[in-house]
Amino acid sequence: MTPTALVVDFESALESVDSWLTEYISASHPQIGRTGPICPFVSPSRKNRTLEIRLRLVGPTPSLALMEEIARSSLREYGLTTWQGRNPMLQAMVVVLPDLRSEDTELLDQAQAHVKDDFVAQGLMIGQFHENCEVKAARNSAFAVSRAPVAVLAIRAIALHDIFFLSERPHWFGKYREKFGRFYGPDSTLMDPLLIDRYRESEQVYGCSP
Image (cartoon, rainbow, N blue to C red):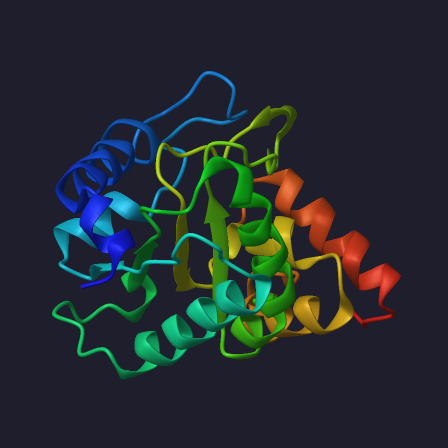
């Protein structure tokens, strides 16, 4: 057992993450800019036993290379996991980093940005959450939505609302369009004009035929 492992309170970290998932992520928030929970998939995923929790230690001197390897190894583990529930859209993995210090959380932001291509290519999203995270809500740029008491990486399948996070690069949008383009056809029943507007804007920017 390493010296770092001796001082990490794993039980407390897991309890904090559980409370955060229940009381924050699975709840509504007045600043989110829409009705419903911050993440509509966490509660169904937990009920269907398709949310897996993993613990990873980064040690006293974490590096960007280490953070990227944790993310990529988690991607491999996600693909090898035998999920209890049957719905692949509800499969999610939360990787808890209980010993990542506040002053090192920027490494998590950088790692997420560096590995996102790998995840999107496999039809997955990866998001980082920590006490200093400045990621803003899609519908309220004044709300830092991804704050968490313990640093975590969250992995899940690309969902319909991810147009907000996949319109920045053509290959991301291409992957999203491949999966959800049929929902934006002439017979679309989507009721959210913001999704439709972002999708149409992306089509125009990247020269995609409607």
